[in-house]
Image (cartoon, rainbow, N blue to C red; front, side, top):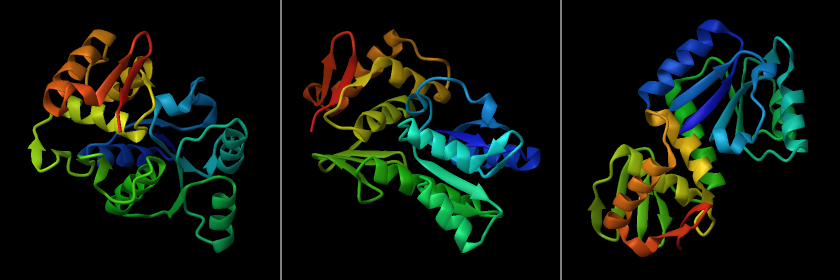
Length: 218
């Protein structure tokens, strides 16, 4: 999982990144809205942790602008504003969840997994695509009754495909999402990982759409 943190507090931003890294979650940290790079947010990050009070504007205004522009990326608001009216305003503005400072890392991680599970259309912590079972929290994969021994790259790759089974995921999107796991991936490296995955889960489960990307079949 690779997320964006928008938080102006230096101490909190740094501690959040460190705590999430220990949970296997990589992140980019920005201190103001104006630092967000242009382009598709969904291709760059899996979720956004958004503070409501930013040096260059309102987090709520930023969130409303994203939703008006059609950005569907999951957003969890992090704020010290604990009033019910603040929580309702945030949710009504397009937030997927709301967590009040100070919070425990374990709660934040659980909320992140829950939000991403809902976006992937999964009802439980163990994701299912046919007889393929993926457990994001434990990095565990199983095919029917057989445990799969996947490398971290392979697990994250099949998990990205499992977010939208039956939908072609462009290689450019996969390269962007998998980059935080180590060195930047080129298309050749992705092809190697796909080939290894096919040997482990069955070649027919990952379809290649030439010139575009890959699709996990249902």
